[in-house]
Structure formats: C-alpha cells, structure tokens
Image (cartoon, rainbow, N blue to C red; front, side, top):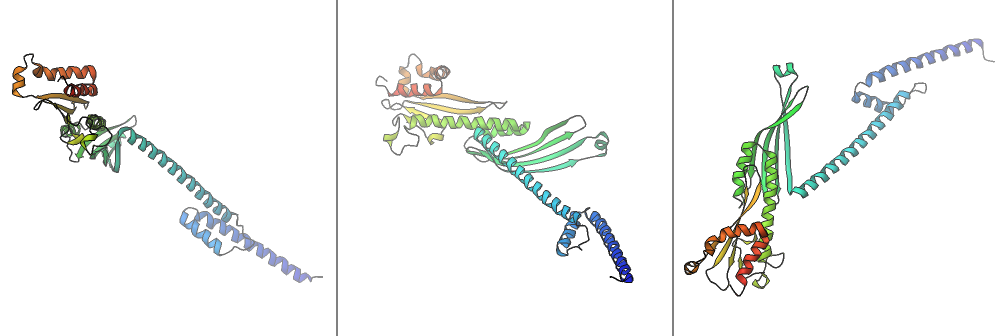
Length: 327
C-alpha cells in the first residue's frame, strides 16, 4: 500500500506536469501562428522541429500540418511548371506553323515597358504604357531588323494602342525594289503592310527563280555541262537563276535576241505585282526589212500574250518560236 503522503505528492507532481505541458502547448501554438506570417520563419521553425523532437505531451498536429502544406505547395508548383511547359510547347508549335506558312522566322526578340503617368491621367483613371520592341529575323533569303514603339492607352471603357515609331533595317540585297518600300512602311508606321508585302515579294522572287530554272535547266539543280541544259543555245541567264532578266537568242539568226525583264513591284498600298517587259535586239538590216513593224509592236504583243497564256506559257512560246526551223 502506498503511503498517503506519497500519493498526495504524486498527484501534485502529476498536476504540475500537466499544467506545464498545457502551458508549453499554448506557447508553441502561439509561436507557430506568428511564424506563419513569413515563409522563411516557418521553414526555420520546421527545421528546428525536425532537429529537436518535441516532448511527448506537446501537440505536434500543427507541425505535421505545416509539412503537408509544404508538400502540397510543391506539388502545385510542379503542376504549374507542367502547365507552363505545355503552354510553351503549344506556342512554339504555333510559331513553327506561322513560320512555315509565311516564310518569316523571328530569331531574336526583346521588349521593355514604361508606365507614363501624370496628375491629370490619375484623376481621369487613364493609364498609358509605352512598349519598346526590338526583333530580328528573316523571310527566306532576306534578313531584317525592326525597332518599334507601341503606346497603349487604358481607361475605364476601352483599351487602344498605336505604333508611334518604326525603324526597319534591311541587310544589303540585290532587290532594289525593297528600298523604297521600306521607307514607305517606316513613314506610315505600318507593321502589317511590311510583313504582308515582304512575304508576297519573296514568294514572287522564288517563283521567278523557279521559272527561269525550268527553262534553263532540265533538272532541279544547275547544269554542270551544256548537255544538261534544257535550251543550251537559246536561253541565257547573265546572273544565274536569281537574275531578273532572261535572254532568248536565236541559234540560226546571229544578233537577234529577245530579253525578258521581270521586275517585282510594290505599289503605294503594299500590293505586290510582277511586271514583265520584252526588249528586242535586232540587227539594223532586219529592221529595214520589217515592213509590218513586227519588232516595233513586239512588246505590246508580249503583254497581250501574257494576259491570255500566263507567264510560263508565254515564255515557252517565245523560246520555241526561235527554235523552229522556219525561223
């Protein structure tokens, strides 16, 4: 049997221990609530909780909950990262599709923004943001650099934006037609016209090259010997397939030559159109014998033929006309 004095002492000790434990639990809870205000403080508390194990009587529910919240936030971060990667992949596929469709590739891009505020704008609730953009890229064989500014105006009812400055730098090319067009696009600050017209201009250049190669060479690659040329004695390209002129010479009439001048023009509105002209080089003796003025009217007849047959069929007919025995 336990002495009474000893039992009373045990009861007092047990009560003191429980009171101390409860007090410790209250202090721990208050401390943890305060530490949740900042992530750094909470991480410090959790690290301390891992190193210094709490007393058996202390409630560790809050500590376990904090660990769970951190794991959950990490999981949400991973999901967010997956979403960003998925979104980035989607945007890259869209950019690849547009590059394939238009032939325009953007290699480098940067942007800076600046908020423009004053007292009047603050009172009216208007916000102005100036965006400075810089990019470089190419459209097939033509490279370019662009610098432009966009002023965005936001108010309670609407959002509007306008290009306030545009600078275009083109790498030196053999296409002299682009110089005047670039100056016009800069003056109008018209980005859409620049990209649209550049796309169609390059498309026409590529078509001209393919057409000249079709009549000059029998294959898809430039000939390495005259035997591989389609019309070796008739068609002449002074600057290769990229030339803007094609000479058609008569193999049986020396000094007689037709020159096709194929230019690509961009009008005031940015519309791209091909312009083909026919020049004749005929010996003086042949001109004196031309009573029907066939040579004189040849350029006008050529334009008429273009409207009826199209470019390729017209060139084919001219070449064959100089290759026949009768001519």
